[in-house]
Image (cartoon, helix red, strand yellow):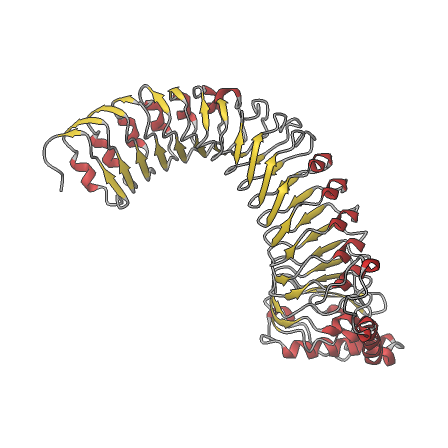
Length: 547
């Protein structure tokens, strides 16, 4: 599809002229639609009984072309003496007996739309064939449905390019996601001024996002994610003042984010992630007072995160991971105290973690692989809803607080690769939902708390690379679901508890580089699941190696 410059007045005289016939192409298409659609049902505008009969015939003709025409959902589709389809499954009629709605989602239809005589259904308002097995192209004659307000063909296997749809001037909902539609987004969609919801996501669309979409002044939701769209995000999209949801993630978009997006005062959900966008995160995004979700991860954004980012009370999700961001994180990131998901992993962020002690709304936090510093206890408190936190591979210091034991929903706690010292708080043993505990490569001292044996859901326990001393607690053997145990590179002494053989799910066991002694328990040899790793090297064991 060719794209015409919006700056027509600046074209030089040397610019090749578009062939005159192309200017008339949309008019020609519209004229052909008019002839086709009017000829198909123009002679049947009279009696409602005649119209109902033609509607029934059109539906039965399409049913006969389906691969599974005997589908249970369509058993009621039979020609009777009245020939009125209003009592058929999935069919709704108006008072005059004309079909106004076809609703057949998730009924395992298989076939094409090629033989669906849309022109025989002039009063159709809603067509829902979503979540079926329809294949082939969307027919051009679907444009005959001039009264249609709702079109849902999502989650099928439809392919080819989009036909001209501008004749569907009444359409409010256009849902075509989850198909295999290719080609570019037709410029003519910008003429469908009544559209509220446009979803073309999860297809194979290519080319650029057309500027003409900015004409959709009533649009509330624009979903174009998971395609192969390229080029910049059009500045003109900011003109869609009613837009609440903009998802263009998982494409190949490039260039900076337009500053004008900060003027979209009704925006609630912004997803630009998994593209090739670059430049700085616009400060204007902090002006979006209604913004609840912002997803910018997996791009090439650089520079600092705007310091007034997250100051509005509405923000719930901030996803900035896997970029090239630097500088200090905004210290008032949870000022509204509604923040639930905070992810800035794999950047080059400096300075302290924002004070999140009063951010009790937190559910998921990922700050790993940065250059963050400061006392970890100054940043976190009691978070009753928190289930996942990873602050690994930073430069954090301080000691682990007993408050972690009050975060009752924690399933993953990762603080590896920092400079955290002190002892492991025994209160961590209260986390009955904890599945992963990683505290490796820190400066932890003292003994392994026997209370860790109460972590009945624990799958992975990594304490390696610290200065932990004392014996391996017998209570560790109570961790019957444990799959990975790594206590290597510490200062552990004593013998390996024979009861460790009760951890029948162990897949990897590493006790190397300690000062363990005595004989290796024969029960270790009974661990049939121990397939990935068994490393007991660099200790002071004696006796024979168990068979």
